[in-house]
Image 1 (cartoon, rainbow, N blue to C red):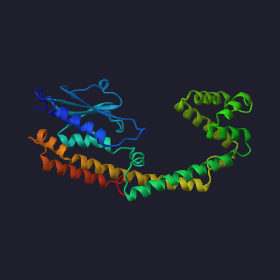
Image 2 (image 1 turned 135 degrees about the vertical axis):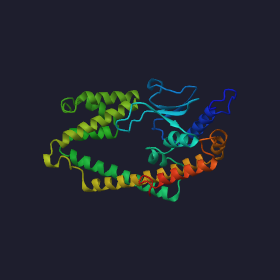
Image 3 (image 1 turned 180 degrees about the vertical axis):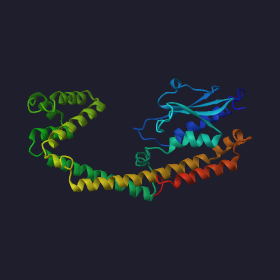
Length: 306
């Protein structure tokens, strides 16, 4: 029986909820990362798409079994909403918990970790150095691009330095010079800064810088419009992308190991022993063997090789 209605805590639904809660508290998330909840629903065997929020996946526990409901966005030709039956705890850990631990935010999360090993420290340090060098080279290239465009150069510097007084002056007195840019966009940026609306200010700042660079680039000969960045900038970008890929692989290995340790913890093994080691399910040793095989396959893939 999958649902023990006589138990106030020790049953499969509460055990799965405990795993989800422990996962949420144990594994770090990046501040900018959108959370994706796992909601456990008892007694229902089917969930319709409208019953599942966009920021969650649902696991139903009923007499039919345990079913994981999700939106298979990345699978071409797949339905908008689907359910996959989970055979036991290993399937729950593999399908529901693994994506919560090892995800596309690995490198960003790794850079915020308070304790890193020597290899991770070196990789993070090198990546940040390349980022800073990239910003410096990009700034130099923009300055070179804007030479001969004093009105664009002045506006760019005011935006880059968030010089509110300068932006107010330009919005009030440079309407003619900034007609091609659209002085109304400068006013919008000023209003966003004054009101403290950081998201709006960031968006308008990016939009204005794009307009400034586009206008300047369009004055160049056509054959060099797409190659105005310096060779040093382009070389640094290649090194930065290579270092980021390495950092992602390091993060994947770190969080994969943390997932493995969590999956082999005494609490998880006890849950498997109590609720998921019956007929047609996995006893402790078989659960461990399946987990070992899953981890070996993951760690041998290109996304995890360092």
